[in-house]
Image (tube, rainbow, N blue to C red; front, side, top):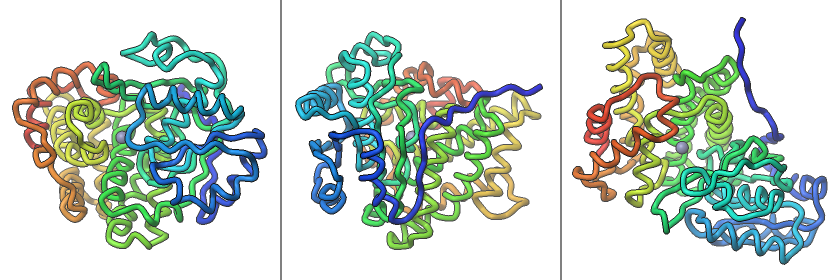
Length: 382
Ligand SMILES: [Zn+2]
């Protein structure tokens, strides 16, 4: 008998104009709100003016740090907030998610952070948290972790617990229409990668496969169109659904070598996460397929890669190589820079490969890659 587990806590509400439901959702779970936004809250002036309850607005500029989350929690306490919302990209959502967890559990981020903190278990529920994504990619609106940077430790680490999955994800593709092309490209490639890696993961289950397949199909249809015409609402909706699908797939089936390497690269040079994933995706698929064909020719991940190639190209008879070619063409069409152009130096590859071997994402990779394989991937992506 097969056995698997699939976490589904949280409501996901999808639709153009759906952000109008935010006041009702807030009223359903609180009386005073902390609302995290991007650096310019004015972009959402209309939404913020109609929340229907006293709200403290907390702008988040850049990636969340341990200190920033401490300030967010202090702001929420001062305001007496009993509900948290986040309107923004992955960084904004992660800030709100971390603050909601700390308001429910007490303590400091370092008490709970993996790797650099005490890693204490998160046992109590977060205060209700509503995620309203304005980009399509990270899947943070449905995942159980928040990534924080600690400049003192020069690394990023996660707060993680099933209790951190947002109480509601309010997914309104209209909010992503103003997303500039470069962000659409990078976050969209992240969404695609976060569907593809769980799809070939040893932790995949029939339910994670179902959402991953749907996400790959949506990204294949929507990514290039959303980049070419930001006002294409159908393409924007496809990418918003691909983002949710990626978040649900990775939360249940883990990721792989793309994210193992991208996490270390993100702590080494200032490369946007989605750009790192985009540059690594084709080289990692190539390396995984070569290693599987050499060591385990009947491995089910090879069939998965072929199925993904068919979904990406729209050709049911597509070979894995056709899927890799589709990814490389998409990178060119979306004008995504190579890692070398963003400051990654060839001499950094060795250190990155060694660190990535130890990353938790590597456990979701379908085959064990050697340090030499990872160096070759970095050379290909650089
Ligand atoms: Zn990612």
